[in-house]
Image 1 (cartoon, helix red, strand yellow):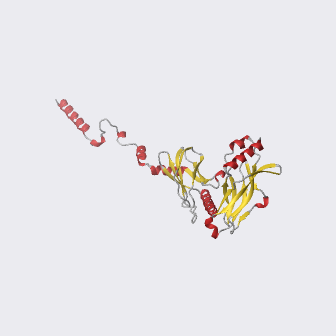
Image 2 (cartoon, one colour):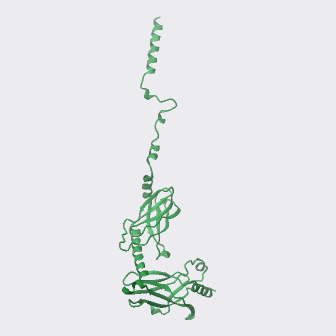
Length: 310
């Protein structure tokens, strides 16, 4: 009897011990303790956003400004982008943001930049503000795949180039407002030192709006293309000057072959008829002006090239 009573008391004490303890220490049915809160990595992902992506991209990317030699005299430039990060990026648009020039719409792109790669993203800059040409604080607004936009500051070398381009743009505008430069309409075939040339004329005509307050215009040099030579008919004719009292300056010129008859030059020349005149107004910087003969003269020059290279 006593043994039976001791056994019943012990069983009751075990049941009380099993039911005691805080309820919050026991997981709910169907869960385990490590599932009761999301992992730290999920919290980090949820808290990251466009700002974090932009900050990481700004750290990974470096940008400067370059311009190809063939683009000199135009407003075409390159956002030269270097990916210093560990992952590729896809660029879908690029735009220069600079207080020295009018802002243009983004230039569409579809360019993948791999880690360690440098690419030239060609774009354009707007006409320069000639009263003030700050080169500081220039940047490119780069649009990434998915629509994220990143502002990348242009480095010092790029800002210096922008300053030079802006000043050249203003000088070129002043030249255009002061005088026009073009080829005349009449050409004839001539033989000089046993070589065939087309003889024509370069016409510098002062703009009527500035005749009363004219500045001198100087034509300093001429330059042809890969296939065509452009030079004054008389070597001593340059530099030539359109004086303030004159309205028209005529410079006789010769257009001929450079004697580049190799297959590479003949097949790859894409700017055969874009010829260059280097001119300036007064004491301002010399500018390159692109001039082209009319279609009839281009046909005659092309026939000349065929005869020379036949």
